[in-house]
Image 1: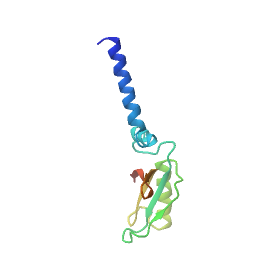
Image 2: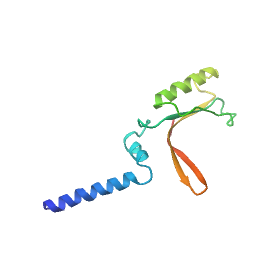
Image 3: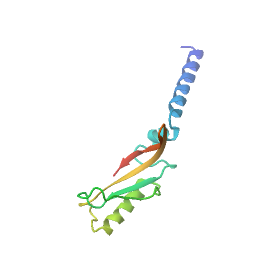
Image 4: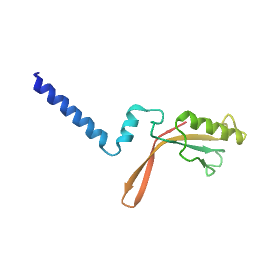
Length: 117
């Protein structure tokens, strides 16, 4: 290969990466690539706690206030202790990471990038 072909290949690769990164939500794409199991620095984590799995409609949801997964888990542990279930034998939880808004024809919706325990 000569230098011109190498330059073109590098340029085409760069354009492909930029196109993929800006399609949809570039922040979400970057977070998916780098922070595969925790929150990116710009994301917040929401704690979702069900104190008793036999009553699935009783759900406690925090504000999106935690900076990382460990902070969410610590908050969930405190909630579990308050509900006399420090080992989470009766309840369950999720830490919802990075809510991304999506525009649709009938309004605004969205989803979380990750749901982890």
